[in-house]
Length: 116
Image (cartoon, rainbow, N blue to C red; front, side, top):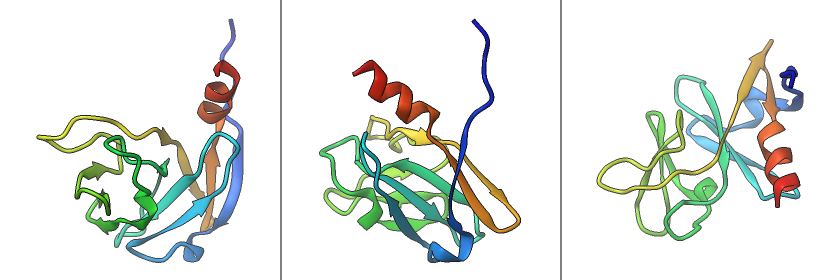
């Protein structure tokens, strides 16, 4: 089995994602939330809290975390993991920024859809 290079999908300009905000990418396997931190880092997670499925895109971005709007779970944007004492994980997607443009690798989403 050979490993292939990820396929990068152009999503938007970095400035299209509000600082300390989100932008939602609609996808057949489920919505993906793109988060932009105050320091202009961009992260992508499945737009679903691992607790009760709340839309993380409607949460508050602080540092490199987002707080779910339903039950205030904090989710680490770098890993998708819920912060202790909570336990769970939102699916994370690789993001690349090149010349101010945001690219997302959906290889994991395609694989998850194919496995379903």
